[in-house]
Length: 182
Ligand code: SF4
Ligand code: SF4
Image 1 (spheres, rainbow, N blue to C red):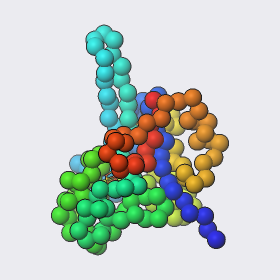
Image 2: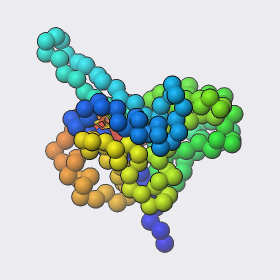
Image 3: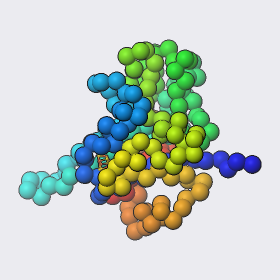
Image 4: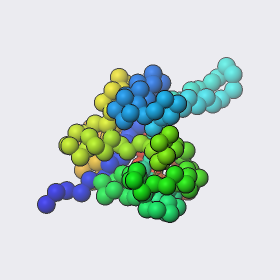
């Protein structure tokens, strides 16, 4: 019997140089229209001049385990996919934007065609056995790692060892699946 997968992403903020390759790769892979993006890079500056610190964060849908976009979708277009990802069935989406209002991570947009779009963790690739999304494959510094939480390998353990791991807005109870290494 096939093993159930539970995809998540480890994002190493020390490795990210904010080159934006992940954004371009995603646009090309997923035919994201001009003016929109499924992933983006936040540059967060903290401290007081001249003692400033900048952190680069490659962002996307957090594929929440308790996803408010799913619970607030009136047509069930937004759904749990069974592999740990959250997906949108285009043909069922009315474009009402209830999910946009419910998502605490601003991860969604209305595609010009009318349905709601967002990061899918390149599920079309995963279904063919690929272990990389377009963004994890292109990242020149290896800042992004797609993992299966049901089968964590040595690579993931090595990346996380000794590092502070956080999940964004964890207090909201969404149980997000992007793991940030500080
Ligand atoms: Fe950062 Fe990698 Fe994205 Fe470049 S491709 S912005 S280094 S995560
Ligand atoms: Fe839904 Fe937003 Fe969570 Fe993604 S980040 S699963 S769009 S609530």
